[in-house]
Image 1 (cartoon, one colour):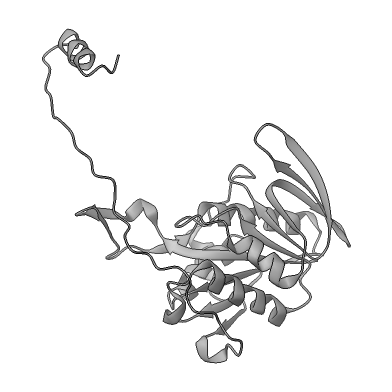
Image 2: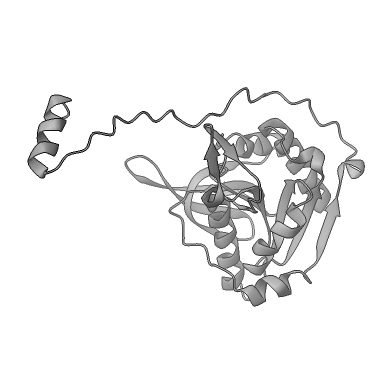
Length: 250
């Protein structure tokens, strides 16, 4: 059983600062989104339960820093990595990402299941999963909480708004995992250091022999909300309550 987990490199949102309503990315390290880590954890748990019959490959597309970022995923239990690393791919849209990921899956070959997080930790468009499934011609299961993989099918429990649903699909298949699927493990520093020795295949834009579409989406503006506060000071709880009443908030 070969499971590939597609993971998107994003800035660590905990380290972002806002200046003039714009995010400041200076000295912000890169990591993977939380739901991507849920997908990886699900794959690693399946590998651990398989008694050596499963392998996990991390697939990532991004700028040149992704070769360093991927160590965290390898330290969390992945066996190897397939990396498309080029500054040209640092800011791609969902169609471009899906095209590169689908091509990478064809290059890897013998993939039984492709795991995603339900959405990326930055734009959270949720479009890449469905696009890749369509490009590969594979069935797709979304909002997965847990999954069992056999030799020819995936049996997943997925979360809906007011219920849980059990659904089966033939392999190979694309599955995306919800945020409540599991609690991702946190690798130790020693595991991250050792992860640098795990196998990695690295491609750049010169190795890509398919036509990558032109960017379809352009971000015009991404300003933080304008926060206007009156700064009213009160000397007692009674004054605070009266002040809130005047604003018709209670």
